[in-house]
Image (tube, rainbow, N blue to C red; front, side):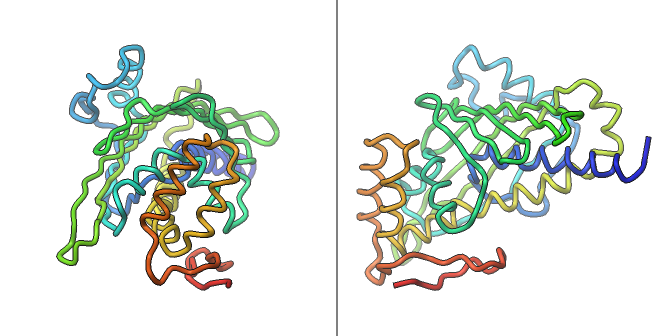
Length: 285
């Protein structure tokens, strides 16, 4: 079957998986530029994640998604100046990271904490995700997510699972400024019935849109870390009113912001230009 209606449906599915991955990325964990691989090849889960650190009840599911993935993307490493503690706070607290972004640009994305290590969210356009941190350490994070998409007319439904692995390293430059270097590996397994029938024509669309979404998501942590240290008053104010962050988390974030405040920090807030490619560093005072 072909025609404009089918093409729109395929595009919707592709966008749904891309937006769903963006949700599962907790509104962005890392950068994955061109050159990362996407393919069908079998991969040994033990070579990807520290299985011994994953709770026993999730090990087989994580292994299945990695081993039998539909899509796979490994991003190149990105390095940027950031204090390790602040970086980990932004990665571990997606509600605060999202709140900072939503204060700068309109976004229908919503997330809710459902447990100490779990979240759920939706993008306002039919995509929803529920995810949890299975491993949280300074050097590696492993997340497992369930993604769902229902088309506006309700005649298309896509269900998928995602395993996300974030690896980080830390070092100091000659001038003693702390840097973070991290990379992301994402495995997506589509579980929906009938997927194989659509895969041949739909796969290129999903791959292209998935790549775009991962790149977009990858800008968040490095961008947010720069804005937090440059506009500490704004960052503290936004975090302090985020209901999905616990009082302890808000207090810890406020302390980290104060510790990393730059001498030339602005008293105002950043402004993001209408053109997303010009995420501006202009100031309101």
